[in-house]
Image (cartoon, rainbow, N blue to C red; front, top):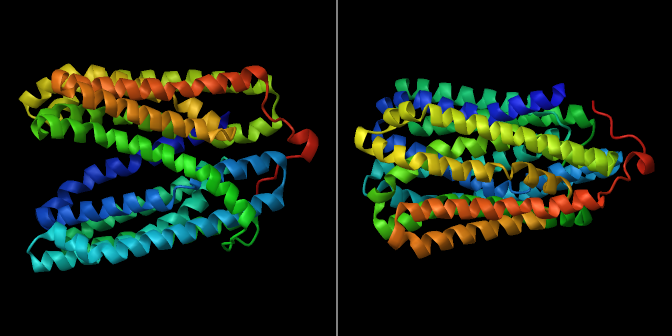
Length: 440
């Protein structure tokens, strides 16, 4: 229980620490770099985030496979999985990095306009971002493997330390060098140091060679699982941005400002719940090999109860402090408009957040296809509601689309309850294969 509580806390820190740090240093960087260079910094950071998501989309597959092999007590197979995951992410990282590297001139021209100096600055930052993506892709294997061993603390501490040092360094460089290129270079260098630290920590844990391999059998299993987790994440991201895009195109940008602000405020309800309960993924993947169906049902019920409590706490906290938050972020007119929408937007986020336990349980059981189906189906249903009703109902249609997405996402519990009820969970771990892999 103590380990699960620790993993929950580290999951919450991993989600919340960096955005808070960004907010803290943003005024310093904006004041010293100016609007143009600050804009380049945010664009380059977005390129890193986008590229990392594409290049690191198989981290969940690594968690599921490694945790399952731990439950089976099969150390040689576990090491094959880690090395194959390393090979996949090295290839994906390099490919994505090369794409960004090649696109740097075009992106710089479009972002910087006719300012030749700013074009060169933007070009350099995007090239650094390309290298950054490769680092992040490889780091994903180190972090996901440690999470599969239910060890969130070490990985999160290294990651947070590197990010906070990067933000502190960014503020200092902004004051003394006034160069966003220097800031990007420092951030990438610290990420490389963090990668080395993560790699050393992983080698200490596994006590084995972790050079990338291209094991065809294991790679095929990882890819078959990872394609669906990537598709599931991509569908959620597309809809979370697409609802505002459809609304803005139909009603004009100003008409969706209040909704966009409410959506931003309500985002932590899902984000903190998903981060805090992420430990369920490896935990259940191991237990489905070592526990009886009755024990597994009990774990899932407790997890859902914790899921509901986290959602209630997050929603209640945001509702209680909504007036202060809205007036901090917007003027009186926008804040008043947001106050009318926020309860409904928060309710949609809370409903979606209740699916977290079901998603992680299905991932752990290897039933990833249905999760992807519900996310894609939810995104299509939500977008369809918005597109069809937005002209007649305006922002209310966007909120209705949010509820449509959440309701379809909750269908993940239908096959999960069936799996748990009929006892079809594989429980051949300890009895058939001996004890789980010992942790270093």
